[in-house]
Amino acid sequence: MELVNSKPNGSEFYCHVHRKELERSEPDVKFAGFVLKSAIIEECASVEAVILYAKWCMKYNIAKFHVVQQTGLKLFKGAELDEFMVEWTKLVQNAASEAVKVSTQIHVVNIFSLDSESKW
Image (tube, rainbow, N blue to C red):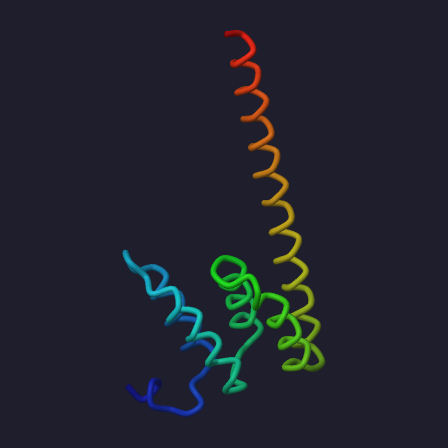
């Protein structure tokens, strides 16, 4: 209870609550995003928390995604900023790679469906 009542709470607490909420059988995704947004607002977010929030935004609120990057650039200094930039780059590259895979799979399915239609 001491961890919950301390203000501001540590970044680890916010990340833990976020992950636990998303692991539930019926997660409250708005609450999961709110938890990390709260960490950022209270200026106690780690690079991990900001990246988790960016991942959440990519899935549930894409309109806020670019704001997360701007926030990270303002929030971190020195080595933390370097870490943030590395993790942000990995996140974006991974998202692009996944998009290419999905696009390729859809294209292959479309080709096979067109091919099977032409045989009939």
